[in-house]
Each structure stands twice: as structure tokens, then as C-alpha cells.
Image (cartoon, rainbow, N blue to C red; front, side, top):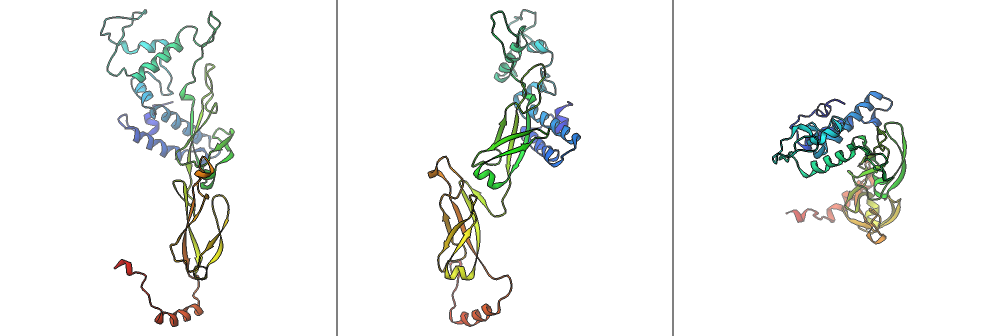
Length: 318
């Protein structure tokens, strides 16, 4: 792969927020779900994902900038990478190969951990059976992971669902979306990433879920909000009406003389909690709606009624 900075279209001085924003923009543009059947776009999406996997991780980004990783996040130079750059030894000591140690300012804890892992993996016999009969294992490379963004319908995200999803490489996987899922939730599909090289385990696939807005429902924490249109007669005389919820339609009794804006609660019809007692509620706000077409009978009645029944609903605004 080419320079990940060029792939994402950002400068080397870009901060992590700029890198994340660039990735999201490109991932949306090249997402396989929006460009089905176009292999060139799928390849571009994979390049963008690989670039973000490298630059989106501050530790790996530092190592890439120092020349320790290639654009695919692979170690440069095998075992020699542990003693790279001709580091100057403050103590004057060297390793068994005559290479000097260096404990420089950019040699942070993350770098130490990562370098030790790579050094152990590069030692003779790593990944093979030793004399003692034990087997050393080599961790999979994060560069083999794939990242996707998946849009989830509002109701599926609230109540949870099991569904089959087709990935950009054509692979179909079974996916469980847990109840109360919010945008930004990440799911891991173990072993569903890019096939590994050199006998290493396959990478994983990470799905970032994006909850789609609903035309009628709105989520507020554990509660669901709904504006419910009702007729003038239902508001004045009262009525029982069917109300949609994310769990299915239920009957709601509207009291007589219900005003516009009256708020009513449907207990337990909101976002599922960890237990039944922890379920959210649905709040219904009544919206009194006049007939779509002018009604002469209603107009005539109001013209006669209004002069003798004056009232000021805006009195509290004075």
C-alpha cells in the first residue's frame, strides 16, 4: 500500500481528530454497500481501512513515522528492527551483535511493549516447536483487521435483533445486535478480517454501528418520545386510540378535554434495560389536529360559540 497519509488525504502534522474525520468521509464514499459490484471501489475502501488502522492508532502511527513499520503496519527488517536506527547508547553498552542500546526521549512505554513483542517473535524458533516440546504462538497482526460501518434501523437498534449481513468481500455472517444499541457501538467478528500471511491467524472484522433516525420516534436515554396527532373530537370527548411503539402497537386512553401538548406515559415501552424493572418508558405528546379540509359545520359552530366563550390561552406569556 502507498503512504497512508496520502491515502487518507491528510498531512503528517494532522491531529487524530483530522485523521478520524478524513477516514469517515472516505469510508462513506467508498463503502461497498453503496458501490456493490465495483471491485475497484472495494479495493479503495480496503486501502482506506488499512491506512486508518495504522494512523488511527497513536502508537502505531509514531512507529510508522519513525520508520519502524511499513504502510501495511508490518515490521521493517525483521529482528534487526529491535535495534534500529543506530541508537546511541548513553551507557556505552551494546547487545550481543554489537548494536548500541538507546534510551532516547521517544522510547515510551508503548514502544517498549511493542518492540519486545516483535523481538520475541523474531527470535529463532518463534512460532515453531522448541526442544522442550512447547509451542510458541505469534499474535495476529492488527493490520489484518478490517473495519466496516453498518447502518441499523432505529427499532432494531432499540430492541435488538439477529440478522445476516453481507461483508464487502461477499462473505455472509450472522450478526447479533444487542438491545439498547447506540451509534458508535463496535462489534467484533473474530477471524472475519483479511487472511493472514506466514501462517498467522486471520484478522478480525470490526463493525461500527450507525443507528438510523426514525420518522416518528426519538430516543432520550432509556425513553422513547412520540408526537401523537389526535382529532378535535378525541381531545374534547376522550377516546381510546392505537399508538405505535418500538415493541408493537398498544391502546392508549385519552382523557376528556385533553389539551394540545398533554404528555402521557406508556410504562415499560421504551428502551429495554438489564431487567424488566429497568426498562425505559415511551412518552406520548398529544397534538390536536384540525380537519385537513375546511369544515363549514365546524366553522359555523365556532363563529356562534366564540363570542360568548372568550378565553386567553396566551395569558401566561404577558
